[in-house]
Image (cartoon, rainbow, N blue to C red; front, side, top):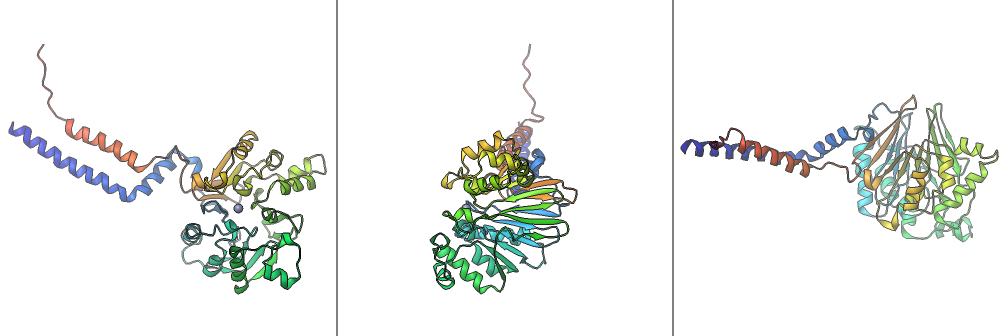
Length: 371
Ligand SMILES: [Zn+2]
């Protein structure tokens, strides 16, 4: 009897130590989850360290912010997230901790604001305040004050609202070069090119359609950025590049990676446009809640037209797509597709139950029944 009591006491002590150790892993739960999930889903955490081009789709809610490390070491930022603190903090935290290397000068050589909407220019004033901007590309949308000064009377081009106004006043204070982007705004280097293939007009009835369509080409890999450009823009591009029975459209518009237009809304991404672009990778920047983005129609269009990899900032967190000098594409993500993700608490319960069972059962003599 005494022996049994002593044995039980030892088991309780071991169990307390075991549970203590188990709970202490709570403090490294992120590392544990990342390690396990990347082990089970290696296709979404391939090694991007050898990539010379890295495109970071930052999780800033139902908004766009895409930061690019160009092969020559220069930096480009397309849009600046939404006009709220959560989005702005997510952007600045990400850029400071995951984009710029420690000790590196925090400079954006190119800062593109696709159009005047708050979910694209919302963080612009803070970006100007926090980083050095060499050159800013803006749409042909003007504040009422600018319009009055420049004699612009086309009402479509006049964009009111405090968020856009804040962006323009911050831009005026920043000592940087400003270009109103057009299809002549291409930036060409020895081994990569940034081509603006839209806007094809100077005046649109919808703010979204002012968005430039940009193709970045490196090592034979093409990435298309679309801002919030809608169906009308897609149709204009298909018309323009379809001179030779559709073949030309394929060669110009055919890309490997597509930033899906307008947060995956069904106002963009028509089936003909997805067929012409035929990306292997599609990225949707959305929070998955507001305005029904992404739309089921868009997700179906991507699926039925053979887009193999569809990533979403609401499900995958921050998404980085890298391209190396041989044209190999690598992908890395902050979190993993919901539904498949292993979480710390699940693991802790499992290990706890198994551990306690072992501690209290090993070496316990079972009463043998006489037979
Ligand atoms: Zn938008």
